[in-house]
Amino acid sequence: MTTSPRFALGLAGLLLLSTACSGQPTATGAPGLAKVLFIGDSIAVGEALPMAAAFKASGVEFQSIAAEGGGNVVGPFADEHWQELPGQITEAEAGLVLYQITTYDWGSAQEQRAGYEKLVKTVSAAGAKLVFVTAPPIRPDEFYQPHMAELAGAPDAARAVADASSGQADVLDATEVWGTTYQQTRDGKADRGTDGIHTCPQGAARFTRWLLAELAGQHPGFTPADPRDWANAGWSADRHFTGC
Image 1 (spheres, helix red, strand yellow):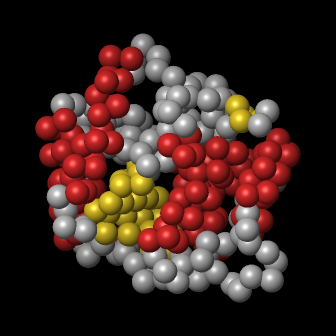
Image 2 (cartoon, helix red, strand yellow; image 1 turned 135 degrees about the horizontal axis):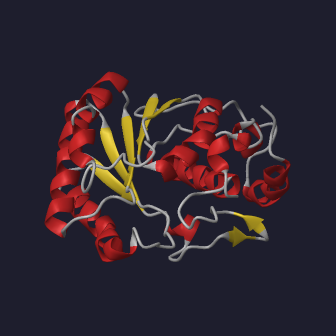
C-alpha cells in the first residue's frame, strides 16, 4: 500500500511539532500501556489507522473495535453493542481502554451517565483503566441536528462519571486538537472529511500525536515514537479516507 502524496505534503506541519530526534532511544511501553483497546464509532475507525502504526512504533500493543455506524455505549444501537462489548473488553486483556465519545451518544444526562458508569464498571472488572476521549466537533446534517444539544452534554456526563470513579476513569479533552467548531482544512490541507463528520489523514495523525503525548504524561516511562516512524507507513491510503 502506498502513501497518499496529499498527506505526505501535509505531514510537514506535523513533523515541525515533533521534538524527537533520530538519536532518541527506541520507544517502549510503560506499566498500564502494555496493550491499549480503542472503542468508538466511524470517526474512531479512521483515527485507529495511524494509532495502530504509532502504538506499534512505540512498543505498545493496540487493538481497535471501533465500529462503522455504532460503537456507542449509550443511545441508539447501544443495546446491541452491549451484547458483545463486555466479552470483547475481557478478551482484549488491555491495561488501558480508550472510549472516544461517539456521534451516537444521544440521551438525557442521566442516560449518558448510566451508560458511562456501566462502561467504567465493565472495564474495571476486566482489570483495566478507562479513559474517555472527547469527540471532534461535527457539521450536523438533518440526521444529527436534533441531537446536537445531547451530544454537547456528553463530555460533562463523562467527566461526572470519571470524577466519581475513584481513579478508575479519566477524561481527555481533544479540543486542543479539533477546536470547538468543525474545520475542514488546516494550514491549507484537508483535515476533516467533506461530509462534516470524519477525519482525513492529516487530522487523524494530529490526533494520534496529541493522544500519545497525553498518555505519556499519564504514564511515566512511556515514550511515544517519533512521528517520522509511523506517519508515512501506508495507512493514509486506506479507503476509509474517502471525501478528503
